[in-house]
Structures are given as structure tokens and as C-alpha cells.
Amino acid sequence: MLSDGALRMLVLLHFHTLGFSPVQLAYLFVLYEVAGMVTNLSAGWIAARFGLTSTLYAGLGLQVVALVTLAQLDPNWQIATSVAFVMAVQGLSGVAKDLAKMASKSAVKLLAPKDGDGLFRWVAVLTGSKNAVKGLGFLLGAGLLATAGFVWATLVMAAVLAVILIAVLIAMPVGLPRGRKGAKFSEVFSKSVNINWLSAARVFLFGARDVWFVVGIPVYFYAVFSDGSEDGNRAAFFLIGSFMAVWIIFYGAIQASAPRLLRAATRSEGELIAAARHWAAALAVVPAILAAAVLAVGSPAPWLTVAVVIGLLVFGALFAVNSSLHSYLILAFSKDERVTMDVGFYYMANASGRLLGTVLSGLTYQIGGLPACLGTAAVMVSLSALAAGRLSSDTNQEASV
Image (cartoon, rainbow, N blue to C red; front, side, top):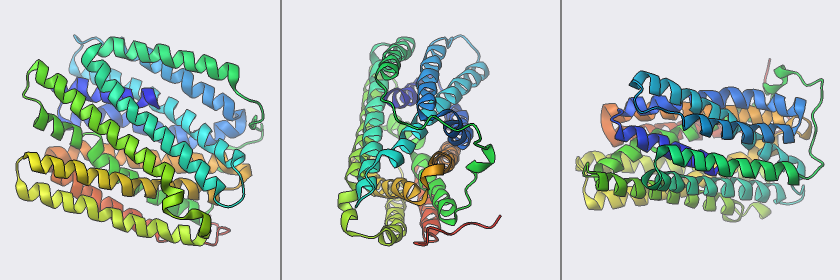
């Protein structure tokens, strides 16, 4: 996750300084999200067929390959060639990240305590720490780009990740499922009504985050902080990377605290299911207010920048609780024997939302600037709340086929 966050920041800022438009920047991440959809849909079957540890090893190994490959980018290539190359490498990186993430999250269902809020606490800690590390990756990527340059930054990350892979191969404990030969790919499509509605809510929740996070805010802040000089660019890189890092780390910390904030130990599963709708409805208010404020002011101002930062941190806190609730519910709704299938399907929906948000981030920013990004986020969170409202405490429901 550290290298994943750093790679995203490296690619975004490096190509923005080369003159790429918001839509072109969004294109760089499209294959990454498409690969995430395909990978998550098939990763559940891969893990069920070949085992969780094999899936984790494959994810780490592919990320090393992606980083080494990206270092071969030639600045003299034509823009079309550079975009195609980076899209392909980002796609490989997306496969790597989602293989590793799906394996880790599925293992929690099998290893977490079954009593009380044990499952929720384990999910929250894993998800929160994962995102905190990814947040450090944003800062690492911006820092490496400003100090070491694009090529050396990718090679250093590849070397560190290779060492981690070797350590995991040596120290991985035994006991995780090794897979079953009879697992069928068709099993990845869930028949659970709750899992399907939760996946739909996840699509719009993460679309609402990425519609401003991927392109809109970094490009907006670059325009605010940089004067176009080399020193100005370097300062802007650090400021943007620092904000993205702080936002993700803060978001991860709130995720880890979600069971306590929601008093999960004293609430029934039915109450937590109802809370998913209420927290999404509260989240929708934040981007709507921010969009109205930025639109009313018209041009960047110091007080507006501070207000946007504070507003997005509030968004991050509410988003973290929503995300943590979803992460708990997918494991609560799934059964042990098909947990990898359900988690894979759920994270396919997650990647679908990120893809939708990524495309809309470049498109809406180019059409209407930051207000359009934030307004679209408000609409998407509202749709997530509607989908969450269809969840039921009857976890035995199945969809008609």
C-alpha cells in the first residue's frame, strides 16, 4: 500500500508538470481501475482455487515488476506512447494491489474472533492501518519526485518491496486455506441480496471520493500553490503530497476507531445495518456545501483554501465511518466457505466506483472545475445512501437468478 500510494502521486504530479490536461491525467488511471474490477472479480476465485498465500505473493511480486517497468519510461516518447505505456503499467499495478488486498481482507474473516465486536474491530484495524500506510505513500511519492526524480523513485520503491516480499515468503505462518480444485468461476457472482445492495452502495461511495480526489483537488491545489517556477513546483509537490497523505492517514485513523465511535460492542447487527444509511446521508451534505462555497467565491482565496481543507477533512472522517461499516458488513454477510468470492465481488464494486470517480474527476474538473467535482460527489453519496437503505437484517435472503 505504501508503494501504491507513492506510485499514484508520482504519476499524477510528474505528468501534470509535463502539461497533461485533467482528462489526460484521468486516462492514466483508467486501466488501473479497470484492472481492479477484473482482478477483484477473478481474485476471489483465484484465492479459492490456489489459496490465500499464493494470491498475496502474486500481488507483491507483480507490484515489483510494475515499478521496475515504469522506470523504463522515456521522456522523449510521444504523448500517446507515454500515456499508453503508463496506463499499461498502472493496470499491472492495479492487479497487484487488489490481489494483495483481497487476500488480506479475506483472511480476517477466517482469523478474527467470532464473539462480540471482534470481527468489526479486526476489520477496522486492518483497513485503517492499510489506508494510513497508503497515506504515507502519497507523501513518500511527492517527496521522492521532488528529491530523487521519477526514475530513481520507482527503482527505490521496487527494491524495498522486493525485500518485503522475501521477508513475507520466509515468515508467512501456516494455516490459511490452500484452495480447492473444484472452485468454479461462476461462484463469484453473489446470490445474496444484501451483498448486492452493499456492493452498489460501495460503487457510489468510492466514486464520490475519487471524483474530487484523483484529479480535481491535486490540480486545483497545484494552481493555488505553484507559481510555475521550478522552486514553486517543488513546494507545490510537497504541499499537495502532504495534504493527500494527511487526508488518507486521518481517514485511516478514523476507520480504525469506527467500532468505538459506533459503539459496535453494544449494538446489534441490525442497528449497524441501519447506521450505514444514516452515515451516508450525513456525508452527502459536506461536498454539497463545499461545492456551493467554491462556486460562490469564484476564484481561489487563502480563506477559501483553508475552508476547503477543513471541509475535506470532515468529509474524510464521515467517509471513513461509512467505509469501515461497509468493510465490516461484507464480512458479516459472507459465509466462511465463500468469503473470498464475496469479498472479491465486493471489491470489484469498489474498483467500479473508483473507475467511475476517476473518469468523472477529469471530466467534471475540465467542464466545471472543483465545484463540478464536489457537486457530483454529493449526488453520488446520496445514491450510496439509497442503496444502503435497501440492506436488510435478514442475512439469509438470496437474489433471484
